[in-house]
Length: 49
Image 1 (cartoon, rainbow, N blue to C red):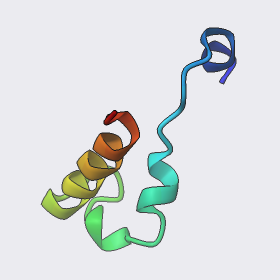
Image 2: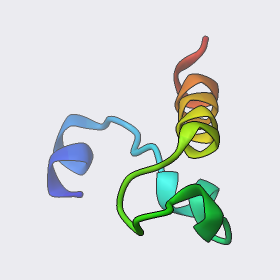
Image 3: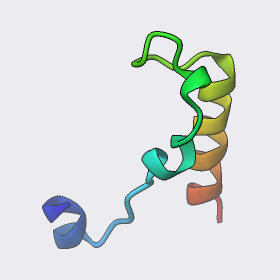
């Protein structure tokens, strides 16, 4: 967070978006297609103008 504070850039919090969806991480690390889609949507919403 220090770098984001110094550079004044936002942090995209994927943890909040993905909490409560363990089925999207079958091996508990890597997302399946549904998890990757949710991640992409979250990132898109954060960076779109």
